[in-house]
Length: 232
Image (cartoon, rainbow, N blue to C red; front, side, top):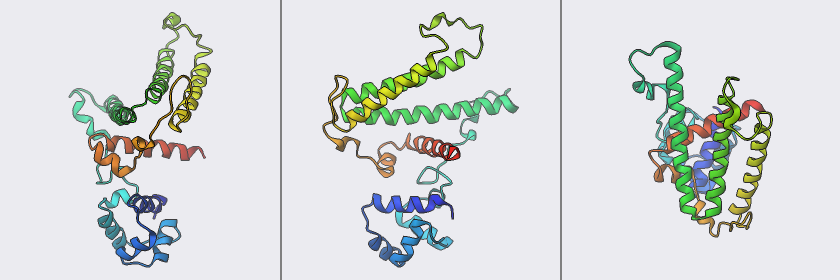
């Protein structure tokens, strides 16, 4: 059993506010055995995977980390293939499909982020979060724009040799401001978030509140964390 299983079953139990003892009783196993499953010390059989999937109303694929969607839905290149023209084929077809898929994942995830920001009703957090994302877009634009040295750099006022370091520094400052605001502290002329209840989230609440966008966000999280783990 992969490490995702132990992490996910623990998350699902805590999300429901269940004690390990209560969950074990309702699942028909000992607390010690459930503890071993949650810690990844022991592997369970297929019958228990099915049982716990029914218990938490999720798919077996979700429990095993095969999909980021609780009901087993997936996002793949095939989801975007119908958008491609009939004369496209081979590598070009795959590249365009990949771009369309990533665009869908990013835009749907941003929809959730901005809706959450609206619910917090905090001008500072919304402003700083937007600025952070704008800088990210700016950096990507300059990387792509600079791929061809013949493109006129007069479009930008910051030198090509400096934009990468300066934009990263700006993002660090923005991130520090966001941490202060989200913890209730005033910074950069903005008041801190008064009530953290607006940011009370879980995978379950996200799935229910944003059913059309949640699969994309969960895929973004999974793919990004898989890339992070490869760095370690």
